[in-house]
Image (tube, rainbow, N blue to C red; front, top):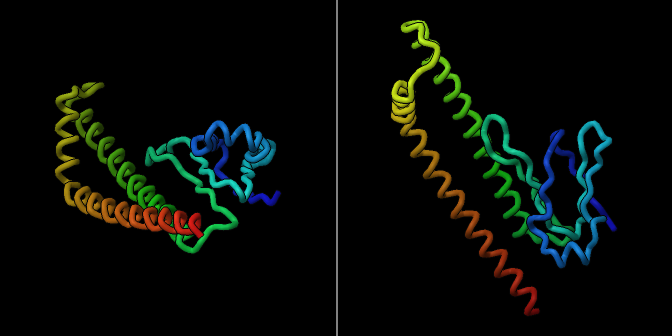
Length: 175
């Protein structure tokens, strides 16, 4: 059995079985997917005959779960294009939310510090914080609209590619 080795961030929670049916697990056994825990960086071993995705815990800044997509030896050009597009979309999304959430945290801390200096109150009320949230959303309205439009464009592109892959698979079964 030929295997690929993918290095993943330390402490990555492995949720690889979500794409496998219980009958597949019984048929394949637990040898298909394993985690080498003794390594400095955990290494996930996935057979090239299995197309499984590995899902990690949420990122502490972006709150998005990292996904390592499985690829097959027999992957067609169209399937590879879909997988690479999914990875590029994931990276773009990760970058946006990391920057956005960092900016939000920094501005929120500045707002809280400013109010502490003025009032010497140890905790802000929900109403006082709602002023900050509204101001932040108003200031970043254009960024959110731009993000949403790009997100829709990328997802429709992925849907189109996924549809083409399914048609390709059906055509291969007929031949």
